[in-house]
Length: 118
Image 1 (cartoon, rainbow, N blue to C red):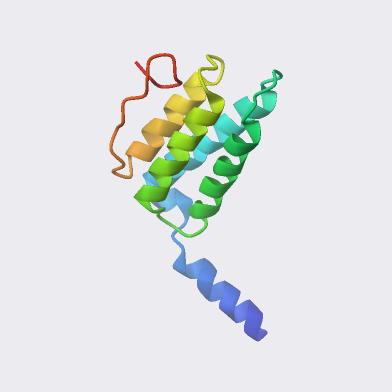
Image 2: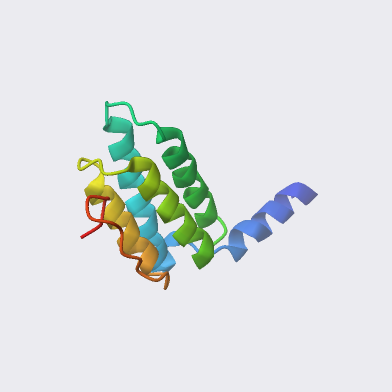
């Protein structure tokens, strides 16, 4: 095994598999759903790129194991703000919020009309 392969193998072994932590599985599922919902939403969204970038950033954090709660909360707020009050995307944002809360991120009330807001 080459030196680079050995280092990669060590890194892969040190990251817990997503299936071993139900919070990671819930977050992965929510990210996949919202990414698909966003991809399938045909209308123009002014901040679509911001939402897509944050979804990719959250996806990248899964590779490192349990994500930082501060980063999770910040990404969730950026995604909710970028998507706005698009009712077609609200269920996916709500699922993402619930998945983020599993990591102990405090529940912040979103304004009425925002995805996941009451």
